[in-house]
Image (cartoon, rainbow, N blue to C red; front, top):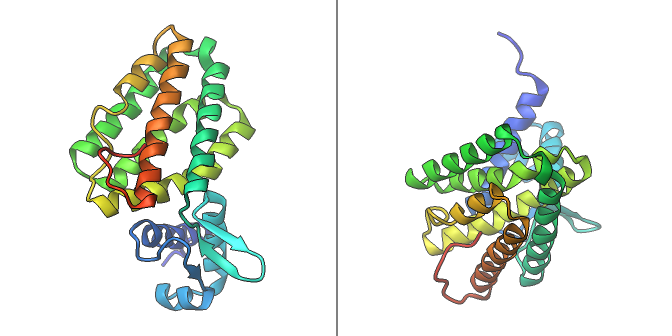
Length: 224
């Protein structure tokens, strides 16, 4: 039989570990111990360590000096920092691409919005979270700005963790079906100023709802 490529094996472990974190099987803030995980996954520590490094890069795990590796915790301060950064990053991304939005860009953005809607209609929460990140990530990819893309990639994992925990706690099966209609409409319009307002409002709603979740107050809508 053909040997499974090392990269594929590592990706398989990373997928399993990521799923365990996002499903709540490993709680935010919990320490992850290589020996324990190696036994649970039935793998050696080498590829497991590589998979853990991948999840550190994704923002789901954090290596804390002298205390080990932990699942990223959920705090109000972190939410405020990330959502304020998202506003700045996304506006900057659209400024970079605005004059270069061609038919391919328009079709690509609509396709990702359609994919998100399909996941919501299917009530597939995990797929909806991925699709929502892919929708927002489209403009970053389109810029071709390597540092910007790396910065976006560095906060994607933490957003996944927030949304998954929020949805799990409140029995939510994905974002609101029409929650991105205005965002896409403005992204395809000729009014950059109006888009900037929508991005700011969009992120403010999401940040506020996520804060409410972390504070243990009831929420009336899905965080974004």
